[in-house]
Every structure is written in structure tokens, then in C-alpha cells.
Length: 353
Image (cartoon, rainbow, N blue to C red):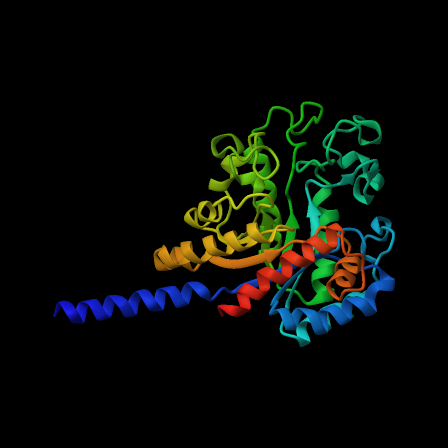
């Protein structure tokens, strides 16, 4: 009898270990290509992504699409409808889920440049009239309580979702530092976790009306003080309690770039599906993958199913990344570093699945 039990336990553990190797999401995040990069982007989707085993492509579009519903928000190097349809069709033909992304709430500026939303609609700014040329801040945010902002942003979301035929949408929402500011007449004195969670829920509910799923980055829901992770890859400005406030069907992309903090478990144990997201350090990426598999294997069934897999980030243009991948770019660049991480991570994913 003991031997029989021993065999059964061995079979169970072997099956659990095998199941842990199988991850649902093997993804990459890329900025939308420039119009003149479409041939290269199609080549990358058709050749590189299937070769590496990618099944999910987060395509960060932001204002670089020729919106017909809000043409005043079209930025430079914007893709046409036909070009975005080409990218979506190529991904679909290769069995790759395309997930459009537009940064919501934060990341409404970069360096001295304020992006289209707050240039056209300065009344939406969380800090109106402050920080000329964006000095002394990281990125601007829109006010989540402005009565006009969501009609605009939802038009953008709906258009890219309709054009691509996507079922999932990524809203960004990382590194939100300007929230609940005293200069904002609507947000002054408000609880920042409530503000953040309310904005996530509003976006999620809009998507849910058409059975669409929301993804966001996870840093604002990690307590940077308690964990010691700090204010970038976690939050020190009061948003972390939002982890207890969101609908559990939101998918979390848990990004860490210099160390493999084991925070995917934080999200899974709080009821969220989660992917781990590295950038340019292969050692960190492989440790994150090990953590994902070990946590999945050790968890109860319902929790284990929430560990979805891996999402490689790139943080460079589509063109530079694709050229570096094909060996057609410079060897020592941020794009080349991200390519190296991507190749090593996906080599390991293919080896064990």
C-alpha cells in the first residue's frame, strides 16, 4: 500500500511539474512601428514571432494612429487604418493574439513633450498650469475625475479595438506619480488608491460591455515601502491598497528589470491573473520564469491557473528592435540588449514546453 501511494504521489508531482512548464502567455510588448517600418514589422511578425514561439503581441499605439473619431489627437508617424489592419491580420494568421495598448492616466508626456491629449485638452491635466516644459516631473497625468476625459479616451480605445478585432486591451497605467494633486479642484484630498482603482474599474467596465479584457502594468499596486522595491517598480505614493479594490478579471503585467522580485505571487494570491515582464537582463528574465513555474506548481489549482506566463518588454522602437533581432542593426544598443534577453527567455520557454 505504501508503495502504491508512493507511486501515485510521484505521478501527481510529475504531472504538477509538467503543468507548471506549460504557460498560457508567451508574449512581447512592442511600440507600434512607424509607417515606413510596416514591411519590416510584417516580416518580424511573420518570421521572428512564430520562430520564437510568441503567442501574444502587446502593440503600444498611444496617439500614433489616424483616429477618425478623434482626429485632433493624431500624433506624428501615425499608422493608417489599412496599416493597422495589416499588422492585425498578420498576427492573426500566425495564431498570435494582438493586444492594442494606449497609455491611460499617466504617461501623458515625455521629457519636454506633452502628448496630444493634454496639448489639445489642457483642461484634462491633473496639474493644470504647473511644470512648464514638464520640468521637475516625470510624466503628466490626466485627471481621472474630469467629466469629459473618458468620452475622449473611450473613443480611442473603441476605434483601435474595432479596427484590430482584438479581445484584450492594455491600458498601461504604470509609474503614475501625479494623482490626487492639491492643484486639481476635483482630486484634491482624495484617497489615491481610490482614485487609481476607480480609474481602472471605469476602463474595465467600458471594455466589459463588449466582453473585452483589460491588462495593466502592476507597479502601482505593490507597496514600495513594505517590499523595499521603491517608487518606480512599486508605489510609495499611496496607490498600493488598490490591489484590494479592482475587479479580478483584470490581467496584471508585473514588470521588474534589475531584480526578479517575487511579486507575481502577490497578484495571484489576491485573485488576479498575472504575467512576469523582464526587459534587458537575461538572468533576471530566467529567474522570473523559474519563479512563475515554481509558484504555479506549488499553488492550489485555482491559484496556479492565474500564473499565465511571460511578457518580454522592449522599450525601443519597433524598427530598432526588429533590425537588432535580424542582425541588421548596431550591436551595442538598448535594442540589442532587449533582443538578447528576448532570445534567451524564449529559448528556455521552447526548450521546456
